[in-house]
Image (tube, rainbow, N blue to C red; front, side):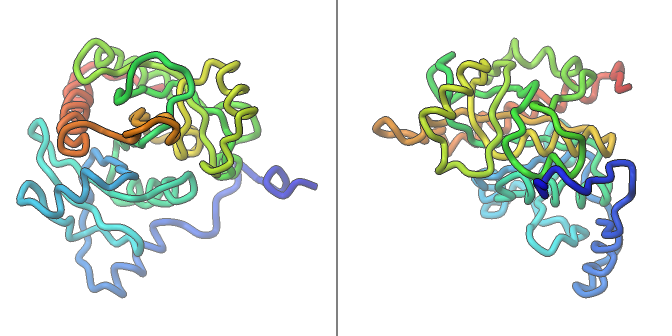
Length: 264
C-alpha cells in the first residue's frame, strides 16, 4: 500500500472544515466577523506583503483569522486586494486557500518564484501556468491520481489577453515539487522532455484544490533563477520585483472586471 494514494474518498466531505476552524480562531482572537477581499494574492516570497506592511499603501485586514498568516489589504484598479506572504509549498498554500475561500475570496492569484528549466527568455519573467506536474503530495488528497493538474479553461480564456501586455508573461507548464533541494539532473532532464518551463512548489496542489472545490484559482511562476547555478542569480529587478508584481496584478484585475466571464 502507498499511503498517499490509498484511502482517499474524493466524494466524501472532510470532518475538519475551514469555516469551523476560523470560527474558533475568531473567538480566541476576539475578532469581529467580516470578509476578506474578493481577490486575494499568495506571495510566497513575501516581498510584496512586506512592502505593504512596512509602507502606508495598505493595512492589515481586521477580519482574517488564520493562525499562521497575516492578510494585508491594498487598493488596485479600484478594488481591495488581499495579499498574504510566505505561504510556501503545496500544503501551506492550499491550507491558506481553503481559509481564504471560506472567508469571502472569489479569485485567488498565486505568484511564486520559480527556477528555469527550459530557456525561453532571460529571467526575470512570468509564466501563466496552464498545467503543473503533480510531484507533490497535497493534490492527491483532492483529486484522483494523474500526471498533471490543470488551470480551469474559463480562467485561462479570461486571462488570454495578459500575455500580450507588460510585464512579460508566457503561457506554459511547470513542475511542482515538494523538495527543491532534490532537483537532480535526471529529474530536470525529465521535466525538459515534458516541455516544462520551470519548477515551483504550489501550482499543482492549488489547481487540484480549485478543481475539487470548484474555486477560481490562477497560478503564475515568476522565473527569477537558474537554481543558483549562475552568479548573481535570484534577481527580481527593481524594488525586489514589486513594481512588476503590481503591474501583473493590475492586468489580471482588468480582465476580471470585464463583464463577459464564463466558468463552467
